[in-house]
Image (cartoon, one colour):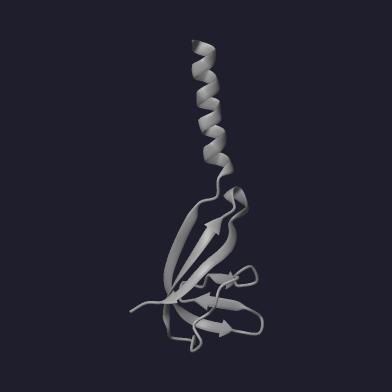
Length: 88
């Protein structure tokens, strides 16, 4: 019985470590370089859009408030940007 409980606990721990976690951040764009695919937010975070497969808002510009949805890559930080939308 103890071995079974230990096995189940280990499986749950492994599953929680191995899965990617979705996250989002909201901020105001300080700079947006469409060609280099980089957004800099007002908190000075730099977001690379190289892995973003979706559409960007056509009129995206500095001063816009946006929400960036991303999928984490565990200890390696952000895995990919999954969405960008304008917010009020």
